[in-house]
Length: 156
Length: 101
Image (tube, rainbow over all chains, first blue to last red; front, side, top):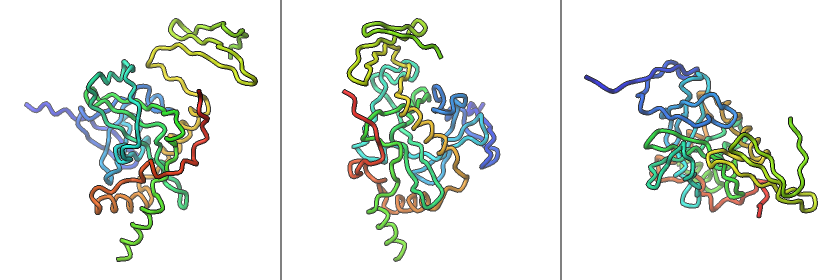
């Protein structure tokens, strides 16, 4: 008897999707500005990017990136006193950051100021706000160096 | 909106769990103390609005985001551990937050 329960949901971008029930993330309070949509899944897109897709609102989805990609200087203060998120003393968690895609030529940026912390033990998450000038809400995806490197690779 | 006048040292309760205290006045700034359960989130309005705006604009993404995401993903894969622009190297000119004491 299979206990791999799946959930189906509608995506206005991708059509009907089916995912395993245990992969559903519950964002406590939803996202700032979207308080009613609390249940999401991560869909593969193009590593290191994924889609954070609502399973209750068909057109609500965000491109996200793993916060670990920003190196050791991106320190996210863990909300250890958050009883609902319940990270505990030995937390198993992931940090996901929302990517803001703008019409060219505006730069694509990542929101380092409001990361989403996901407790991998209970699959609950919360978008927190880091009130620090070192964590901008619009962190450019490309530095001049990495863009040059990528352009040079394409020429070869 | 309920508007209440308080003197420094006086407080207001919001429900049973949140207490706002007027700590003092310095020039044109008012110091506000907030006692709330640790999972109640407290934001300065301008920060809250900034995140709100950023989330809303990020939600407005098409199913085929522009090529620079694809370019980056390709570069990331080919360098195997290619990093996004590391935080330490960035000159932060995108934030206008003040540093509170």
